[in-house]
Length: 176
Image (cartoon, rainbow, N blue to C red; front, side, top):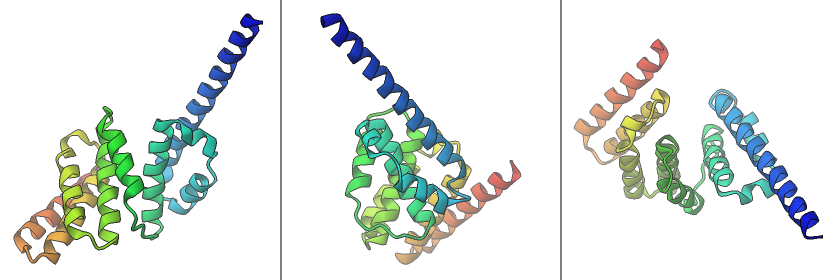
């Protein structure tokens, strides 16, 4: 009987691990087309099996992609509590690219809520990670946002420098 229970537990764990791996693969696939087809990505993310979100890494990746898809679909999120949790999760991990994106989307959400100072702080934390990020598109987005915020605070020198950086990253992205 004890062997049967042990075999059952191992089997369930294997099935669960397989489902989690499938969930990660699905999220990685969504990442490949989210910028071009954010509405499709949002539909898939909204229909995601919630039982898989009990795994912290799946939950964090899903939440990050969900914020990205909503932002790309012009759905302005204003509650930053979920993205704050995502940032906290990725701060304890090695994936600096996802941490960068988490700070970026935390900044976007804070901006949407009118919390411009908090937004600037989140963008600044993302900027500190910029050397660990390979995605020129996101680097350009970050600097475009920093340019806009600095412009709002009438710091035109910093604003122009940020816009020039954004342009540089967007041009570099197209050359590749």
